[in-house]
Length: 420
Image (cartoon, rainbow, N blue to C red; front, side, top):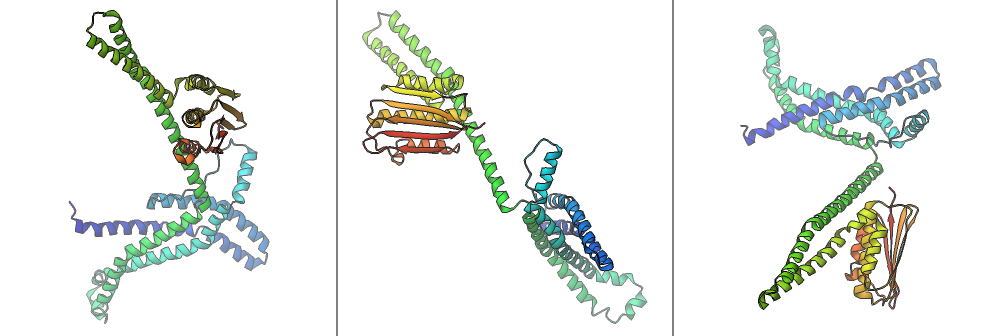
């Protein structure tokens, strides 16, 4: 077992080896394009013709940039564990037209020319810094082992060297200091190079933000679908399990009342009360199941679910559903709950005599309107459930609006994107 006091030197040594290896493998890739512009400069100086040299150099640099960039990305990933992730274009079926379009997009991309600038301008500077760090490591190792090198020469030559006794200690001390500073120097150089590579070889800040937004949008969509699937599972479990048990209990209690007329009055009253409570529990459970996710919504769609909802309300509802085809399940669920909660608010707070519900699909948008002739004055921030509906609609990038002047009428409008 390694003592805690010994872990830090060992960790520093491992990091120093890793960083030194990373820097050593970066010299050649950073200098890979130097021969190209060096040849172009030499050719121009000898012949005086700069146009052909420039054309050939640009062609070689453009063709070599993706290869050198790929080498740098692999180097960063393997030796540092850092992913310099490129911004991948959308996948398209291959054809010559698609290949030409992607090549033109790559040539005109700012990311491509950032990579060219990295390899042409920053690469040689980074190679120089890497060589300096490696030279310092070699010099430190040579200085720290100066006495060993001195003892390897013949004794006659060693004694004839006047600095043998006075200079070797300084060489050794300087070597030890260089080796001691190597982990921090190599680490700082590797981190600086990694940040530069991430900024110039990877996607730009705007591209990273766009990728992040797309990732969050996909994650949110997956979460909404998972929650909706879990809601459906709970609805099925309640409908097929708990609800059936309560129905069976109510039936058995009803049979007891019907088949045992000689029950004592107290027992009959208790059984009758239990029978009534079982019926109330079944009714409440039905409302709960419909609130979670009505089975008819999944089986027959939004039109049938809204028709059943309107039939159960104690006031007249004029319902119009105009859909060419079924919209995605998540949109159906949100639309149903918007209408259900809006109608519930009408019954509880509006004092209305009638209401109208309209559902239409216009292009890739599902428009929902619920209008009543009630007292008006509905406020989404007043805790009437409209605030929760706004959040539910916003979760799928929809828009939600309430128009409710005092005296009425009140109109609740939701626009839900339903592109598949």
